Length: 115
Length: 112
Image 1: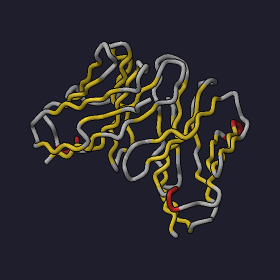
Image 2: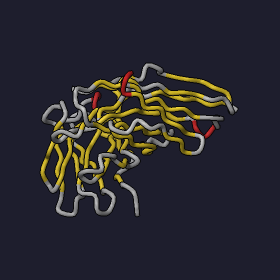
Image 3: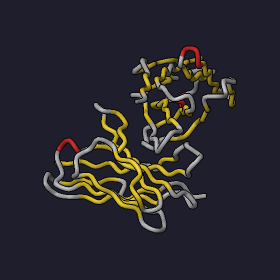
Image 4: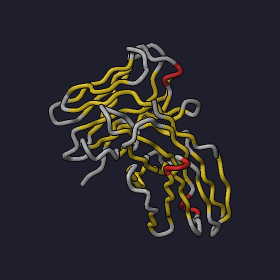
């Protein structure tokens, strides 16, 4: 069975601060994908990034960056120079490629960015 | 491409009633998954359909059921509603081999 842990329930920052959202996962499969989703107050989950288990390269997209480390089973997400529009709940998720697997989500981290 | 659409967006039902929620996937996507989101339990997987067949099912009672049509549109049904069924129901679509799922805006169900 798979498990995703997001230990930070809620984070509050002031605009322009950098913030890192932690994600730790557990799986016995060697081939899997990790994801981050953003859920604004409207409710829809917005896909942010996918990373496969064989690609440990960090990725940067604008103010967003992701740090994948298999050695610590972590897939952390950093927002640089946070903005009020970044306020949302962020979910980390995992899916294994064996069989008909489903997404396993963490409990989510609520990020509140105040002006 | 249009995104995943779900109808209705909001629904209020009474205990004991039944409800049907609808989901239209992104054009070309053949897999549809349903999730229940509540403050206490988070995001929980309900079931997945591919080519009109249920491929996977989460740990929910038989009151929760679903189906998929030949055009990949999907419906989920909850019978004999309970107060605990109040939740945001999210539908997501994907294609085999892509793994990332694209979510709709959800249907917020309130059971009174």
